[in-house]
Image (cartoon, rainbow, N blue to C red; front, top):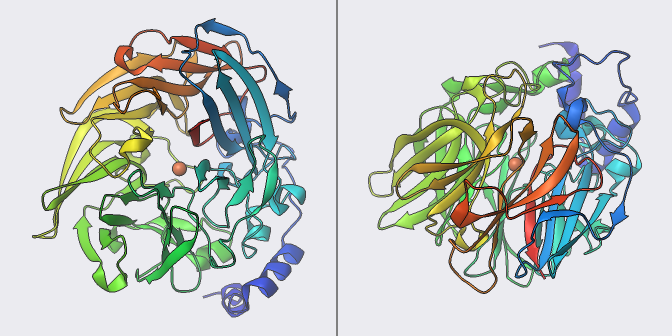
Length: 478
Ligand SMILES: [Fe+2]
């Protein structure tokens, strides 16, 4: 162990507020290299590059017809470094893009999420020990009347319906650790369920349950043997399922300037099934083959089994943290995991060999049996994260896939399902996605009828400025 590591270990024992001040002080000034290596800085090139302007533009041009029953806001978050530079895709501060849709018309607005991370143009190191200093760049959801911009190492931030930033949100002071960017709102109870993971200091994992009116009513420390990246998880009607997968944080390596995360299959991989109001003592840990999952599609219960559909990849970040995806082994494909709660085993089946991720179902089916699942194609031949030019619709009962071709030069974003508000049927609604025409360098929001998925969109809303490739979003009905 080097002296640097020993010094870091002693320093990291200080309380977070003190450590936060020290880190801000000693973090090197964020500075872009003169020449950006395209393999490391792919996230600043082409349509990954940030946009600078905050716009508010009404009456967007539409090809086709926006379905009249759609009444709400499509909102999507993504990394958009204020200075134009960030060390890593994960580290750019967030910008939300919103498209308001009503009476067959659409307006556009985009705003930075104005947290201290944005105000001070921070990097991740400087923000590491200040829970308020979130880049707020990964997801955006609504619960109990609040729209929350999320990232996974800090508090959520509240934004208003006009996308203006209001404040951080710590549930009246009850939350004292980070919140995942992938909480789940239960469609039956309207509870908000989430976890938070930490890379230093036990407990490495916490579970939280928020009532339908927004009160944090339960927090539980969960034992896991080592700090791992836990990007997403699952809920069902009665359970939550943690994914303890071997993308392991290594502080010694981080301190010495190496990659903080390493894929270590020898550590094993486990799914932790816990009753939603249970504690650490109630968890059943079930082994699966070592792998990584950024995003599951959904999970549900059937008799004494739990069925999960996940975008499973064999490995993660084997070429370092810059290789978020890239190459076949580190790109997700749809798998089905069937957990038998009696035998405490998991059957693992690959459903499809198409590379895909950013999977979603109808939000009203989260934790329940959904027949339709949606995902975005990824290009597993590329060396860095590259979106594909198809969106996929899966029939989860039959394990079949339907493709929507976006065009030779057009590549996708996360597909979101927007239901027909007059129907409870997951077969009655639309799939929305912000896609980008790389040749014309233009972005659009497409609206596809889910019953006519492979056909051309019913509407293409032409966006007034390029929307950089981003992460996740929500359809918020008015
Ligand atoms: Fe995500």
